[in-house]
Image 1: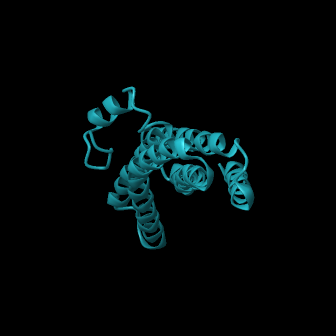
Image 2 (image 1 turned 45 degrees about the vertical axis):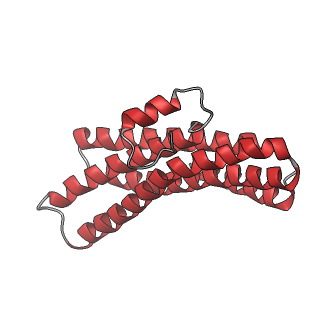
Length: 186
């Protein structure tokens, strides 16, 4: 059936997510939610930029934020597929064990951690947008923030479950510290 990517229609992704296949799963869903949150932030930013009262440094800051949101949205869209692929490799590695399993578990932690990183950055950008919006655009920003928070929590859970098994050495400890640091900034 092929792995999901940015070219998939949403319905196809949702059907695959609801199937008995283990991938895509929670990490891919988290990445999609994060990309949706970034998309809402991009929409609001573009609307703000179209207003004649926005000029000079404020316009420059909005444009910079828009570029960052677009970059995060693109990265999160790519992580939909990456997470599914990483999980499939983890399932296959569980049969083999040893170093192959350790490496697959580390990858299954790093991928959702990247989702967390992307969502934390995007949440900060959307928080800045709230100060510039009225109630209607503000509702879109808050919806984007909710999607990003949900994406963060979902991805953090995916990373945490793979950290729980232990046996990952220094790399596992470093990833645990990073997860805890990201959770403080959520």
